[in-house]
Length: 228
Image (cartoon, rainbow, N blue to C red; front, top):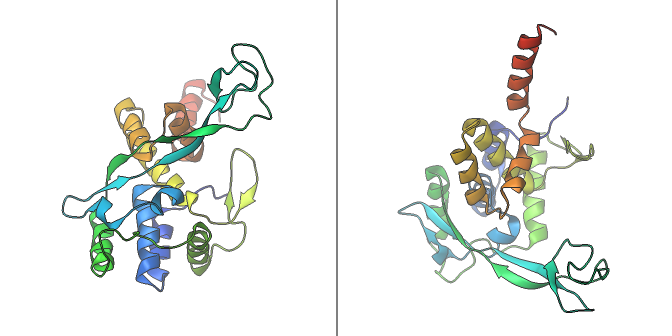
């Protein structure tokens, strides 16, 4: 059976199966907010407003620009050649830092876990004091605990299978959001803001994981063609 993303039921089961409150919070927060692991590990307790159910997500993006070694022109990180002199930039390392913070909503069930979890922490403490590798292990172990062992998920773009990892929780939020949004551009744009995507095209790439939406359109086409 082809499986491309985690269902809400699977994610809740992963949270329920976690042995430690810290791990439950890690799983719930990633699934509820759709934030990246790098963002989660930068969040301080003082970034939370549990009364109003919001969190400030800090996002530092490194390597945003390339500087042409030939003419000094500033170019995008993915540009293969300088737009001014045509110099080959394939071996030029992108530099610079862009900081983009955003305020997003937290669900009540996640807030309940957070209220219990942060009561003994200081405002300046990291919310989750783990390494990136340890967060991956927490998510992977949670997947295994509900039977998602080995290469359980398929990447529809590459055709390759992989194990459960933190970005799958972000994927699942995007799938649920776009399924609800349908063709409403405003709701689609809200997902871009929520996930912190600079480009709307990046947000729309999540449509590859929404087979229900594709099925609906394909069935309408079949009906028009009276075929299949």
